[in-house]
Length: 122
Image 1 (tube, rainbow, N blue to C red):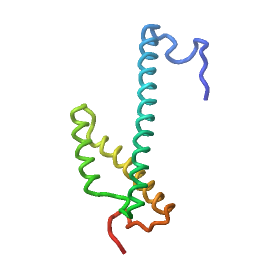
Image 2 (spheres, one colour):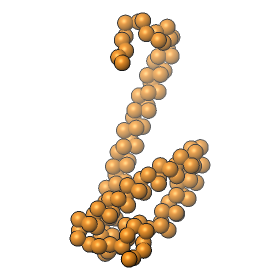
Image 3 (tube, rainbow, N blue to C red):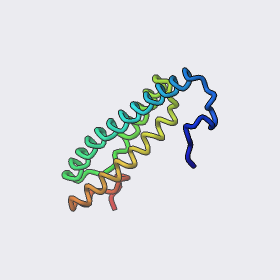
Image 4 (cartoon, helix red, strand yellow):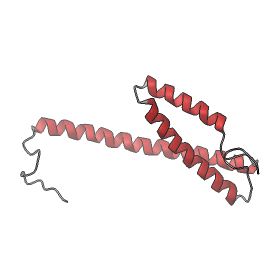
């Protein structure tokens, strides 16, 4: 479905000042989204280096104690920022899962048989 700017669509009777404020807010949101993407890219560059270090020393892909500390830390940061801590935890868990996947792939590519992500050996 496409929309037209011919003046016959829903919301066409909205005050121009409201449209301008909406555009300003959306531009800020777009800038924040870009910053988030760039920050995630930087974070993953660092975690890739961690993955290579772990692979070189045959360390497990996951570190459950570190993950628990990071989750607690992020929940606290979220509370202080008035962001839902449960949302922040879900977001971090998603990132952690991706990082572990990368670490496992790095270990496989390095030819190492690092211990499984759960830290247990067979």
